[in-house]
Structures are given as structure tokens and as C-alpha cells.
Image (tube, rainbow, N blue to C red; front, side, top):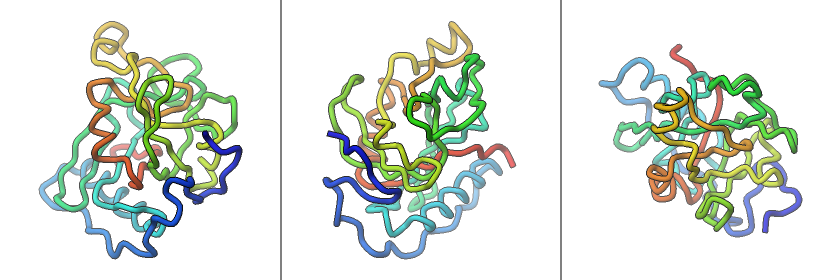
Length: 206
């Protein structure tokens, strides 16, 4: 059950007490990357350092760049230990793109808005939901503090697929959740869940 309320930064019961007081320093962005990749790594490193006391693992950080349109792979898994990055498609909320342009227009933390929220999220436990196995998210910032009561999660969805882009030129929209393709979602289950950081904002090319 999702609790009725949870303070920003407070972990769900399944993870409460599991977080170490410190994870040590986070490596700087590695060399040999494009300027954009270095920008993503810089954001990942800074955000992981900012909320490190609330994380269980800081090896991989998920960065969602909502300055990019939905037809581009804009969910980046930045591995701060080995300096590699992998990117995936991810949907935004219909409340953030009412005209369904494929571009996120605005963020919102308001219940019922069906919009995407910016900020740092703690990835919590797996559970079975409407779209199958999903990852619960805990909002760590004022801008996403309602993530748990809004049931904002990571989940697989049929409308996040390359075929959607081929047919419509963009992905479908979620109700504010971070929806990935069915074929990619296991990557999130195995490499981003379990007390890691997911951070969403407009990052851009710099």
C-alpha cells in the first residue's frame, strides 16, 4: 500500500533504516565523452553528492533530460564507477504536454495534474501494478514531494516503443510516471532500483 503521506526525503518502510550516513565522494565525470555526455555525468555526480545520505547505492544514477523530445532516448544511466552511459526512451506525463507535441511543456507536483515532476527521486521497492512489475519512487525535493501519494513510479508501457515513433513521430504519454519500453524496463529493475537516484529536469546541450 502507498502511504497517505510521506515527508520529502522520508523512505518507505521497506527501506527505512537502510541508508548509510555517508557514501563517500562521488567520482568526477570521466574523460573521453562527448560534451553532452560530460554534462549528464556532471549533473549525476552533483545530484548524487547532494542527496548521498538518502541513497543506498550511488554507483549508477538515472538522469532524465526533459529538454529533449520524447522521440529521443533521454533517460540516461550514468555509471559513476566505470564512466559508461546508456540511454533509453522514457515518456512524460500528459499534464506536462496537453497538446501532445512530444515536448514536455511544464512540470507539476499537484495531485491530479497527470504531469511530470522535476527533482531527485529515490528508487524504492518493486511491486505489481497496472503495468506489471514497477518501481516505487520517493520524491526527495519540494518539487516532487507528492510522488508517493500521486503514485508516480517507473513502469513499462506499450506506448513507449520505437514503433510508436515510426508511426506517430513521438511516444505516448503517461499520467506523470516514468514509463519505459517493455523491452528496456528490466534494465531499470536490475540497474536503477534498490535505493539509487533518479533525477529529472531540463538539462539540455549546454
